[in-house]
Length: 304
Image (cartoon, rainbow, N blue to C red; front, side):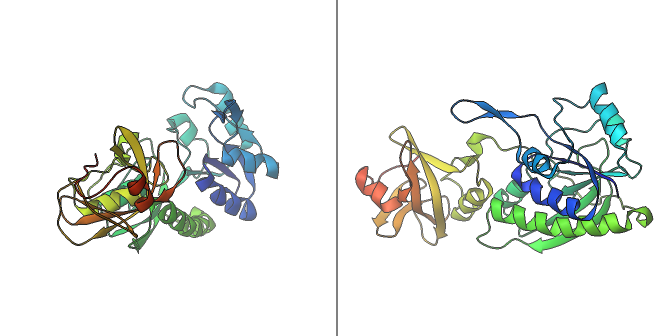
């Protein structure tokens, strides 16, 4: 199949690699270069970098809707099908109609649950025990299209958003290649069940909510990796939590119960949370116990 690929972050690169091994990739569409680093130098997306190294044609349109130049180039590439994986822009009707077999989207959730840009993160934050990956035919609505393939899996107890997203993507690649193999003969089935939405995370989503249960705090911690990460405040300064674990027991939410070699034990709405490794503002990562001793944190100290 002549394939056009739409994707942007490093998570999407293995999807493009797999397609490039099995099919002629006639066009890669990704987000425009973004300023990065101290000098704010415009930097290509990971997908753009891979495509350029492979000699694949790349487009980086600022917008798609009403963009004649993009639409003409897309038509000229003559893809039979297009694939999206974490592209990050809404696809207008005029683009969706270009490939004869439409657009396929690799979406890491059990659609219609967790439609939107952050499905893995919200599945973890909300304490789901099961998730999966869907290969969907894209329509104008947000992740509303019919499904070609779905794979279900249990979420592992310690799995964070980075590990789970990669595992779902890798299985999604297998499904995607199977779907492409039989695409001319496949009929997608409509989504069934109650829909939910997974919006982009905000920085505030990473704040540790000590009033919640220890399990909910740990689930949130897993879901906000790698960004915005978990954090709390002490003495008006932000302290990032790199590692934590829930433990049985009782305590006052946000109040330190004990500091020992292993870490800092803090009360929650139900159970205790042990801070194992932290990173104070402007400092390097360190064992939570070292941070506590260096900042006068002991039993009775309130963390916010």
